[in-house]
Length: 154
Image (cartoon, rainbow, N blue to C red):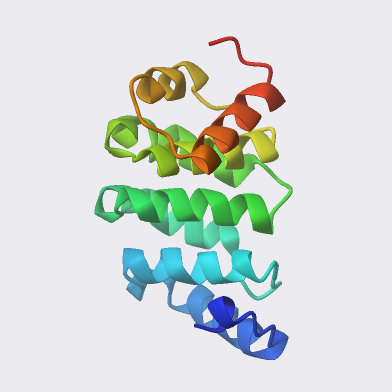
């Protein structure tokens, strides 16, 4: 709720990051995705938020995450970090097997996140998954921007 309201209470996010890091194995998939999204939406890279630990937990339970959660986490990583390593792990382990389940928006978001961090990604899978889909203008822009950024021939 704080992220939607654009309330940048750094101290509150610091406490939330510490709590999440200490109890990440007790957090449900939707909760983890929502917390990471809220940090990303506020552009708060808290030192208390251990992204490596959070993504490690996600990778162990990736089948429990809905595709929207995976898409939101990819977007959050692109907003929170300049290091593509965590996004590459997410893109390599959790996303490829489920790419066919992604909506057009999810495909565009993941492609945007990977391109923003210059992360390697299976672009041919994204291109094949995109064929025949009806993209909204913003989704199409995100996907085309991502392909252009990494110079993909489709």
